[in-house]
Image (cartoon, rainbow, N blue to C red; front, top):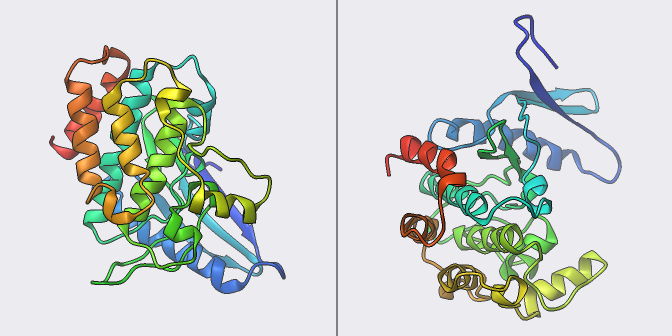
Length: 264
């Protein structure tokens, strides 16, 4: 849609029907409005208005010209350095989200929107204000869930780290990280909980060992074996990119924007 000034917006519309409880859509709208308060400190799709008209729920947000991160994942001609730069940007955004006491809960390529310069912005939160010793009820997309989320346990920021690990594995290799596959939701949940992780070096020959180590640490089955926080993930990715192990020219525009936004 466009306003009287010619500014473009995206409008997400969801319809109430017997298979979706109103409380679910109420939560989607509430979370969208809550996430908009984080847009000043992180790369988050800005929400201008959200609400309900009859059986229709709506969210008015920035129109992102670059589509979703799925486009980048599927285009294997995009160089590794650009993919790593996008990953660094996302890790900084998620670290900022966590520092504000928020769990995203459904990190996946479809919930990352790209601007015209391929800078990634996060959207579609399963928002929660964190309380000491508590998390949020499991929701999300099975193939990107953490094992604890898939098993119906309460989750913390560590679950987002795992989901980000799945996203990064897919972004860098073109594959999901599991040895086994499934054609249904129940099977996928079982795989997330129990299936072995395929070392990323087996997917992409010559992938740097440090990057493989970062991915594998994020994808540990037990939360306590993962990074203690997303800021540590961001620091590892930043250190790798600054170390000159790859030519960083393709990713510079993303990285420089992150340096300005987060003063790193």
